[in-house]
Length: 432
Length: 177
Image 1 (tube, each protein chain N blue to C red):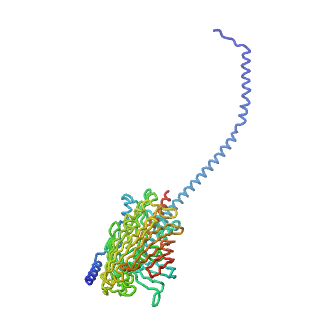
Image 2: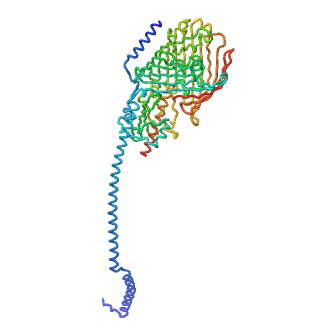
Image 3: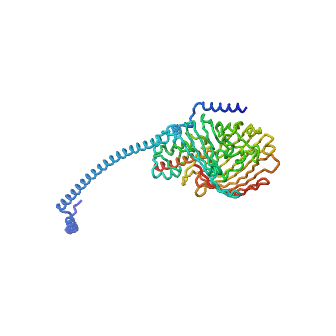
């Protein structure tokens, strides 16, 4: 293949392109050369950066030092906190030990003696129309040891006692209680008879109505205490049995109150002891808020040798408080065997009542309303009209569980020849 | 007849006094055994809740008195706390064990009973009423608890310790949350 000869005009165009490219590149290279820092400038920048690095290293050293100091302080603080905790623990333990010793370790009589009590003041309208501080009771208990204790109550009735005064000072309870074991307890002394709903539990905040109901007052007769011995046994499932042998009633056999049960209480004040009485009670309280009990009593001669009048007593009741609903129902009856009480119709004396109630929370406490129907007859064996009926309704307000304000109104139908006492009653009561 | 009876009674009284001594302190279960039972047999180490100034007003509201204790010992594991608390019924303290689980009462049991009345509170027919109860905002139990006739003060004491245990449980649970 023959070599192709280059023409002169072809050389010219190549040179022209080269020159043109060179012309394009030269200004850019000059500009770049103009932007580049000089070695002096670069040196200055490097020195500045070195100073910054040195400064940062210095700051880092300072920070490290501070961190170390903080760590040390934290350690010291932790140690101090631990020491403080130990001191607080020791102080707390010492205070608790001192408190425990004061509470039970000293064994001074004052640490084994407890105080309590209750009281109530009434306004009675109707025929009575009077204000009366009905009773103030002071309870004193003392533990001789873990199994022997004293329980006592002293009562002041009607504010003032003494010659010609309305009131009385009475010893309502004073007995020594012995624990035989977990299930058995005995008592000796002056104690409340285990009967009825109110005879043993009659603190004002525990019942409705300003005055105690007339059935338990006149038929049982509440509050009823005697001197003697008793034995209480508790079984599982809520059953318990009480047996008691004690001084008996001594009813008058002449006069307007002849053979009236309430008139037979001698209150263990030089009471005749020719004829003791024997009481037994079976109680079941095996469901919350429910109590069912039956009490029986026998006394060989309720006149203590005057007329040879044998007495039998039976009482049954239920006391229910389930949720807001309450129900009390009680029946009691005396049978006196002898010609004298039979002649007066007092060979049979009975009474019963039923009392539904409703209790609920209200602002500042609790309130309850009740209605009660009572029927009782202290000469039911006679032919004449001797029956009392009484219907009461009212309200209790408890600003505190141990303090109560009461209002009720009663309608009473008395036997022929007596005026019924319809009246309003107001009361305030407390226990502590 | 009456003469013989009276002498029999006197003899019974003497016999009673001669019987072996038994303590009035009825221990239904040892508190440490109760705690162990509550945790399946192995109780954790006890902890202490300090009754601080912050806690005192509500404690007083629940008890109607000052607690008189600096610290309360309790046991805790997971959602469960156990409290052993003393509260006076009528005249003597009742020692009660309370198990709280997830803010509800899982068990309440009188462990040592020193009162001579109100012994019915020891039985499950009464204590089972507390199971599942919680504490309302106004410091009251979430449900009504029926009482026992003649044992009002003992029942009230158990209600108070139930409320107190629920309140304490809420305090220690809040700390751990």
